[in-house]
Image (cartoon, rainbow, N blue to C red):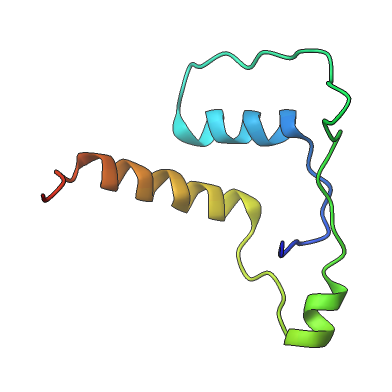
Length: 81
């Protein structure tokens, strides 16, 4: 199950946001779409709201920023065997 906000986001927009939030100089390379690629991600959150009372509380920007911060914290923590 995917929980979505209903805001259309392309893969290019997501990549640009991730690179920007990470402060990275990584290039974003575009390639021709494959037959199974989607052009954008968008969903209707009304069913989750109706059935579960769920609605997005964190924006894509904030959630991605939190994910990057958590990844950075985790990657600095030595693994315990």
